[in-house]
Image (tube, rainbow, N blue to C red; front, top):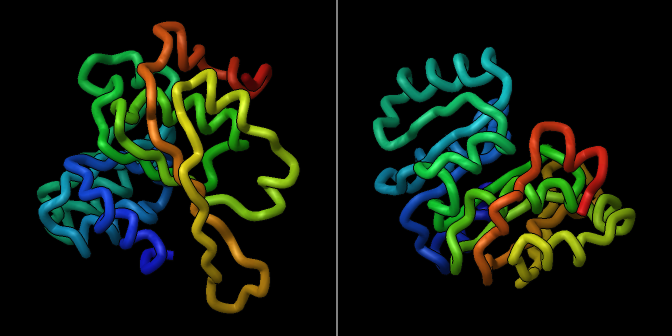
Length: 180
């Protein structure tokens, strides 16, 4: 997965990256190891996961990595996070229309979001309306194959073309209940 992700870093040269819903730290921690001058923020809503991430970051000595605990729907409204990241990466977080609402709160205008999805997920969902509502446009898809799997996966890329409306993202649970 990381080898498919690195060309995106090389092409866009982001100044700052957010790994949204970091969980066990993939791809944020491997990315921070491979690109040691890139500031990376790992964000997860589960406190025990962020505690584990903090231990890993400390043990590996990744001084340029920041771990943050909180919900995307809330942190995206805080000035230090609101549309401040040149790139946001997310995998296994939410259905695409919901995920677009979450990432749009963090991606700076002109920045990019790189979302890890399967073909099956994309066939079931139409995210075009959510993307437009969040000031995002799809700019590409890259396929990759995980070892031992036969179905390719995708990194779907979006560029932020307009600021996000002040009321978005909506409060906790609202995007899942009524996707854009």
